[in-house]
Image (cartoon, rainbow, N blue to C red):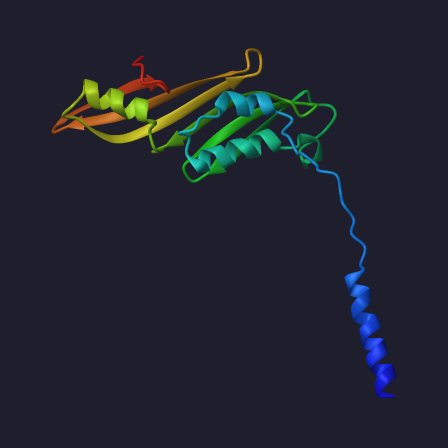
Amino acid sequence: MKKSILVILLLAMSSLVFSQVIELKEVEITAVNYKYLSAVDSDETPISVKELEKKVAMYDIKSSEFYNDEYSTYNISFYIPDGKILAAYDKNGKLIRTIEKFKNVKLPKAVSSAIAERFPNWSMVSDVYQVVFHKSNDTAKKQYKVRLENGDKKMKVKLDEKGNFQ
């Protein structure tokens, strides 16, 4: 009796060793709106902004509750505490344009260096990061509006992502 139980246990254990291994092909998921991601991507963009931009690129308008074949464009808003993105999609789910606005994000080195060099005794109080993307030229216009203070004096300056004053 003991031998038969031992044999059954060994058979049960050995069946686990010879379990079937199935290999699946590698699947790569890409955004339909990859040109948008390429246009707005930057190494110095804050993570929260990057994550929201990924959601915009991956958004599937056809599976949304708002989808209706009769409309040619859809305006969808995406929010995080720091800002928002208003995105326009065509009826096929392709991104047409975006308008993005984020408050008090970390400034890129080029922007903060340009401000410090031109306004050495001024302190940065607040900033607004704006991005406008349009599919016609697949580029994004990025702009930083920074509010500066020096004692009682206040001023606002505008710069592009390379630190050029506008």
